[in-house]
Image (cartoon, rainbow, N blue to C red; front, top):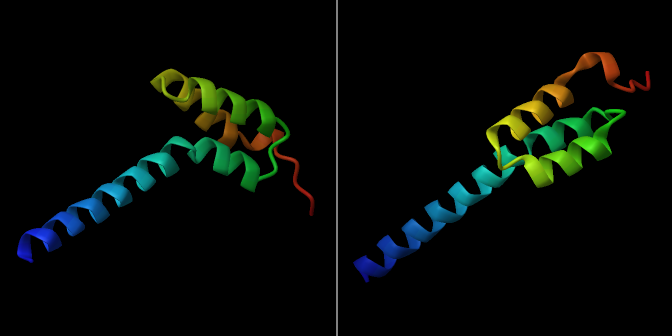
Length: 74
């Protein structure tokens, strides 16, 4: 029984770690969509296809944070 609980805890930790990695990977997409970025479609596509490279992820992250191109509806 103790071994089964240990395995279950390990699986839960692994699932949480995978979910955190996915959330981190899609952070630029989340930011762009949340802020209604004017280039959100392009940011999403670049993030999906080039986000696995460090340069692609950093580029989309900086682009998503760029305040000068937000479409603010206030």
